[in-house]
Image (cartoon, rainbow, N blue to C red; front, top):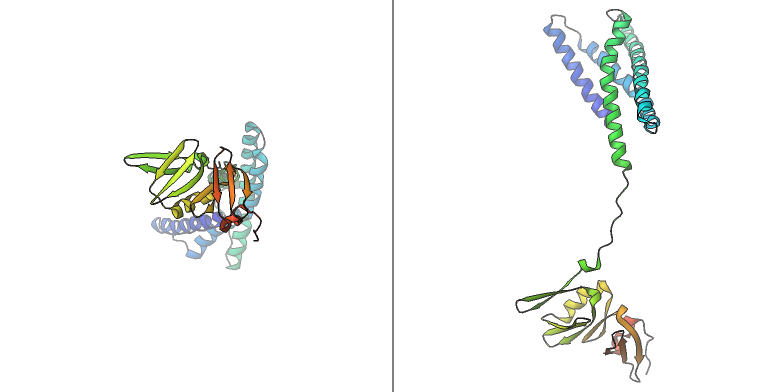
Length: 258
């Protein structure tokens, strides 16, 4: 598609330039003839495009010197085919208008003239194809999972700011207008609400087990249910915190029936 759009623009520019140049030289050319001359060149290239791309793919796997020789020979063959296709299409178009199409000059000069132009087109097609192919087939860099320490809990204590990783925190308890954060670091007091802490820590495996307690699932060693349906949670650190039967489902504990 990209080759077609670019080729159409290139054809239009060349046809307009040919009309202007011939007018400036005092040898005007009919507009339809200019469009036929440039249009047949574009159509021939469009017909040969699959062959050029297939050749590019096959030669890409060879050593550089073989690839270079292959493209030199391929360019010569494509240019010759381009000239033959153009001649056939131009002859047919001019014949339909009742005019004989006869290229000026010997065939050898004509083929050499066309080959010089075709080299540029061949290299341009090849370059764009190889560039796009390299971009498309470039292996994607494996996405790195976000490091745990990129998610930090910010605890402010006056002018002091403490940053904690979620996996450092075992549990959180309510303390009036504050929350107390517990873990291997000890305890930190923060002016936060339990609702805020629950929303921030839920993606990191924390669940509400009591109106006043949040706990990290991975920090739990065992649970023990009381007669009332409430339960005690023993953490791996050895700390024991209470859980309310209202929140048993958060730890997938069986529903307690009194």
